Amino acid sequence: MPTQPVPSSGRHIRDILRDRERSFSFEFFPPKTAAGADNLWRVITEDLAPLDPAFVSVTYGAGGSTRENTIEIVRRIAAETAITPMAHLTTVLAGREEIRQVIAELAAAGVHNILALRGDPPRDMPDYDRSADEFAYAADLVEFIHAHPAADFCVGVAAFPERHPLATDLDTDVRNFVAKVKAGADFAITQMFFEAHHYWRYRDLADQYGMPAEVPIIPGIMPVTNVSQVQRIAQLSGADFPQWLYDRLVAAGDDPDAVQRAGVEAATELCHELLEGGAPGIHFYTLNKSPATREIHANLNT
Image (tube, rainbow, N blue to C red; front, top):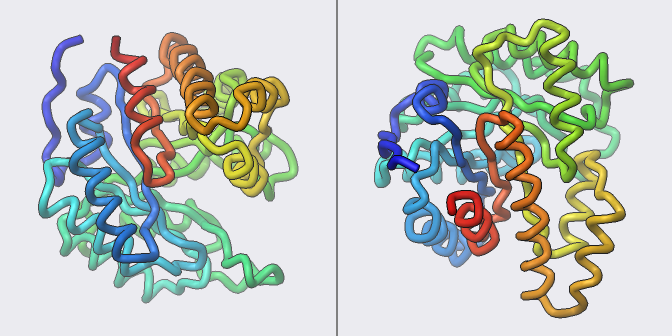
């Protein structure tokens, strides 16, 4: 494959995706400790930067709980690397003035890409009343970002191939997704899934309901290196953890290296199927680790 140009940190993701035949990108979460922050910086700059990612994203904790850490990480990526960073931004427990301030802070930090999410309330607030939010839906946040005085943002949104956990059915969810895109989204990234047919069905439904042809839907893939951990994440996100994958991983036994090999092999097969079928790229949920992601990336580029 020809070498792709290294993006500058200030570029819009929509332009980077347009320039690449297929993209690879990585997602991280803000660590809770100084040691974790040091390790994440090493993962970003030493392990994954050499893979020339189209962009990297940094999550925003439930209820905005990691706001300052998220902003600091994307600011540092923008200032000290050639990688294009994207900040997640959620509306739960945040009013318009707070969101306006976050957008201004991101703009001042040289961050020009935002993933606009409705988000989840903290786990210790199971009775949280979403009707009290000033932004009812992610589409409202998309419009608000574009209306900001400092607006020079490329905006991404989330897609849920197996439907959003709060949606009544997939058709309704996809209709709402297309409306969210038409509110001003430049691209979408899917929630994790483990079987390609979920992605194709979702994409076809989106096309049926008027999805703009120029807006790519990037599959989000999480390599399984710890079965119980990923099962918990899948349950929280509403993703199906198929029995065949569970059996395949359990067959690797109690050897963590064998489990990782089995997980990397399964994820590589899924990514191959998606890319060969026309998916525009792969967004890896790394859990702040690099070995499995680097192995899959290598498998896909040999």
